[in-house]
Image 1 (cartoon, rainbow, N blue to C red):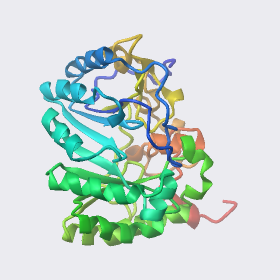
Image 2 (spheres, one colour):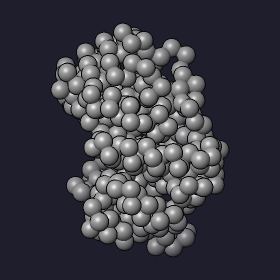
Image 3 (cartoon, rainbow, N blue to C red):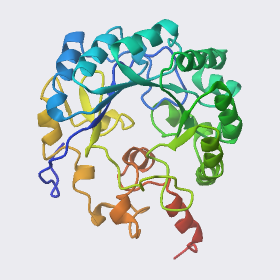
Length: 354
């Protein structure tokens, strides 16, 4: 990327990385933001991936989250995990759960996977419809039970959308009955296949209803032993926002970033590939991260760079325009997040024509 006029010397480090091990996937989910299915043409070899791991200590990386596609389709994930574990780096994995069985869980524990996330996107009919495979949900309930029985720390991750919003209370009860203790809810991004699934999109009222669900049910979940958490694109600045500590701006390119399976570096893996800052086959991680032209949308933010949805907002100094991926995917701009509790409230209370 070309340095902007606001480009400055940056001295932060990428403490948390999302690493897309492969874009190959054994599902074709209707809400997949990365349109996963086939592997990228030139995904990293095992040697290249291990060499990348060797760059992480210098970059002060503390945590790596393996994602995909489906990361378990890549045979060398145990080697990569062990290399990172030997460096003292925390390694977690997000999977669709199809390949998660007793043997896989035992191997995860042996090589150093510290926690696993499994995607569940509604009750049985809704989940199987979104994911495009019948009887998938029932199999995942078995996978979840296997992980819990083995003592593997587990989080269920739900992409909240128009089809599953009304199912959240019943889904919570189902997860509690299985013994799930961590549930992360993330609003859907209109990227990849989700762009073609208008039936999944959240309306502004849906987003407010999502907030009401979290507000009303989070305490009950905690009383029953479940920690309910929300994604970075959830908020901000009303009684519906559950962020603790409060939201202080998008972390992409400040202390976190994403790595694609062919070595692309971007602010987070939710962002489209057009926002890749550089490729690791061409430049070292250090050089891409500290390039004055990298991540300028977050490293040189000013009030003049706000989109119309955020311009003039009194929360700007703290918020910085919300989640970058949500803003860009919905409006084609950064710092213009339409899914904001405070912004929706302000727009609904402003008479038309003013």
